[in-house]
Image 1 (cartoon, rainbow over the protein chains, first blue to last red):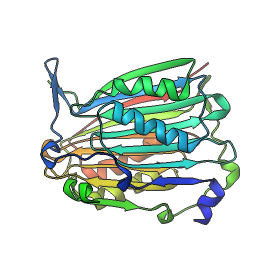
Image 2: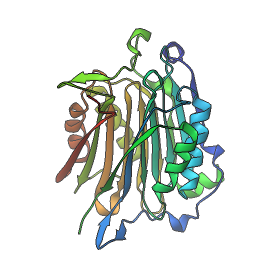
Image 3: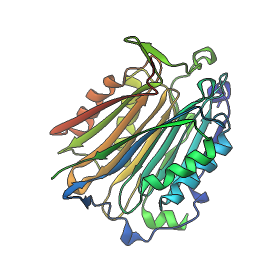
Amino acid sequence: MNALAQLGMVSDFPSENQTNTVPETEQKDYFVEKDGVRFAGTHLLVDLWGASNLGDPAHIDAALREAALAAGATILHSHFHHFSPNGGVSGVVVLAESHISIHTWPERNFAAVDIFMCGCCNPYESIPVLRAAFTPERVKLGEQRRGLTL
Amino acid sequence: MNALAQLGMVSDFPSENQTNTVPETEQKDYFVEKDGVRFAGTHLLVDLWGASNLGDPAHIDAALREAALAAGATILHSHFHHFSPNGGVSGVVVLAESHISIHTWPERNFAAVDIFMCGCCNPYESIPVLRAAFTPERVKLGEQRRGLTL
């Protein structure tokens, strides 16, 4: 842990913290069929500008967990790392339906989030939670349908 | 762990497994300046089609770690989850320079990888490692420069 101690605080919330369970029968992970196409899942790239609360791993962890649940996702694991000296945070929440990640640059009030969800989750439901948690002045949003086929 | 046991095997490789360290002075996380623009980092979205070895968490973990090191990144943490009944794997490697994630659909020989790296790393150096590890017949590659400004 010496190297990590040099880098800053590590917070790692184990999988046992998950608050809901998934029946095994829902773990098929088949592609989504929608709008006449098939794809693996929807991947949102969310850039937050003029944002706040970007240097607090506990706040960020809570926000991403709330964002995951708002989308209907199931949390399996989360891990957050707090860098020094600039106070940026990198972290990820691994979901039964894929993941949410965040990387923050507090010195620029900027955060890069990505939300990848397959199945019946709606990643757009995570956006209001991110807005409330980080109060960005501006949000740049991109959508990719991963594994898109006819 | 009961719910996780229902979902399948969880492999979690703690941060202590990291093989190299980063001097604190390199942890500034400032934006990149290149081609007359500034941005937080390069985010590659990599879809692998006709791929193999997509149901083996240990193989996938090793591949993503090798991919991270090939790009010049520093591994802080990794976590992989093996789903049942279809054998898909979800996982992430958290880096000092951002992250690599993977989600696999073995029943479709498909994997969705994303590689986000800031600073002096070159995420394109990860691609040959992914090709060697998963032998895809086809790779669809997309690049986003996150936090792009003039």
